[in-house]
Image 1: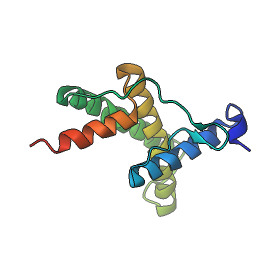
Image 2: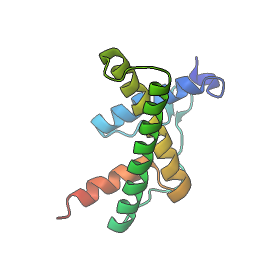
Image 3: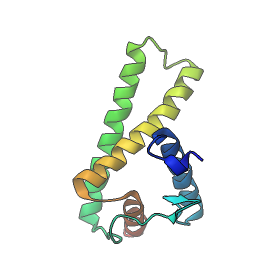
Image 4: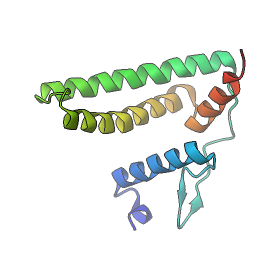
Length: 131
């Protein structure tokens, strides 16, 4: 019911997409973007193959963005007086940081290099076999 009006519930949509990405990473089956009413939403453009050099550039952008966002969230926690050494606070931080930082890094890959995560993962798999 929430996914029928996904514009009204962006957090629900993001949560569903995170679970879809998790399932996709485990099963290898492409399910990101699937909804009960619409089926699979078309991905933006054809699959993009990355050279080793493009992958290095994309990985640098992705991980630098990921790190920057995680540091930013940690600073927000500290500014709010939260103790990251407290296991409950640490777990909350990990959950928030992992979802928010990944989203920001994926968006940056898409906006700056026109690379979607499925293509990024495929390139990592392809080039990880090269010595």
